[in-house]
Image (cartoon, rainbow, N blue to C red):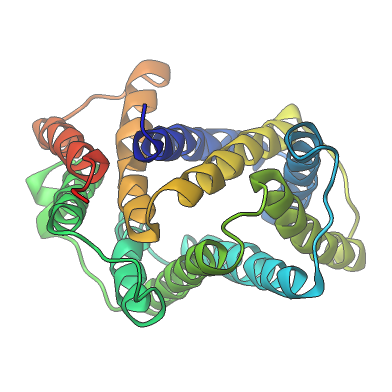
Length: 289
């Protein structure tokens, strides 16, 4: 199997983790706050990443000062700013708005990559695959024509989602441009150790840190595995391809909802799922030299 297909499989596997995370989050939030859950999540992710790094990187987690600066940016922009902006936005806008705006990340990455990644060309197949994945995400997320027709954007909450999306896009670009060769476990370890330290300090100031249910730990394990898979994929394929493949997350969410929660699947969602397979094929297709 060529390197590109391995990267695609890694990102799709990470998307399964992103689809599982909200289920555990909903269960965890019944007993504890978002801050408490985010703090425990960061700690568990850091420990999971540390274990992976020690096993796959000859027991080393050493980085230089320049790399540490990039890792600090990824931690603050990707975990503190983006995650919290997104969580705050969810209290202000419908979930469908947040999901759809969050999936505009490929557009941000293409625009930024045009300025930063001049050596990383986006092929016609990539652009076509991105377009198909965006349409797939729209169909799967909105579910019905009525929901699609009732979509409205332009609130302050929508701006917070766009802020989160832009921040996530910049971290993907920073990782691929500056620390592409760094072990995925090391990247995830420093990202969540730095973010986790900030969460811990803030949690201790506000109240205390406690584990009230098993779901707080399960979220950390799921996200830890997902982040490592995400970085393994990002090493092998273009940043724009990675973010486009992340648009398959609603498909896995719908599938889990059908299997676990017995939720129905609409004709529009089925159409979106079929479109997703076409999009994945286009993005995974090996480019001509």
